[in-house]
Length: 198
Image (cartoon, rainbow, N blue to C red; front, side, top):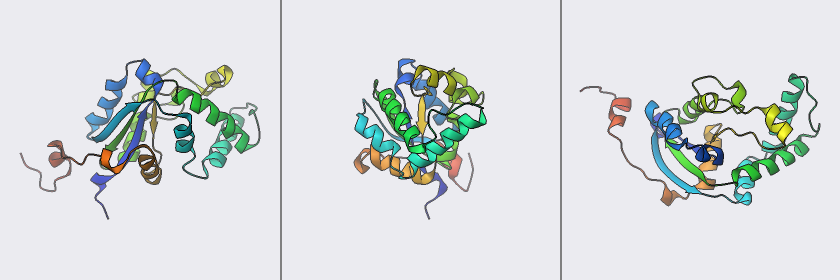
């Protein structure tokens, strides 16, 4: 079994974060907690790449559609459709438009519990209900209600893998093995060495 410190996760800084010049702030949040950046690249993704990204998990369309419908109903709102696959068809079109609107920065972060730590720092998918202190909670005003009424994807600055398995699949989708740089940081000795001494 690999050591906890070897866990990796994918983060994508989305076009809205780049336009708002939040790149350094976002990267700084992950660095300050002790995660290690092992690769990054900036480019404009294709619609095909985005569709493949969101459908790497064959259950994504059904599960996301069901969660979306439940979210509407929990708020006493009428969902645009009661068919989960129709919901995600619409959602996917909006996501492709949003994620190809400009450059993104794809990154791999490594460290103990990297997936959960990154998700915690990033905040919930909807900025309106994200906690203060998270990236989305501190830097975004958007809500599902506003994005729905505008007919667009929610603008929430960052994509972060939701599980270790999802991270592994997404990393393979966005990066080749040659693009990942194995390197050591001095700070890793303080964070991970069993014998702690100065």
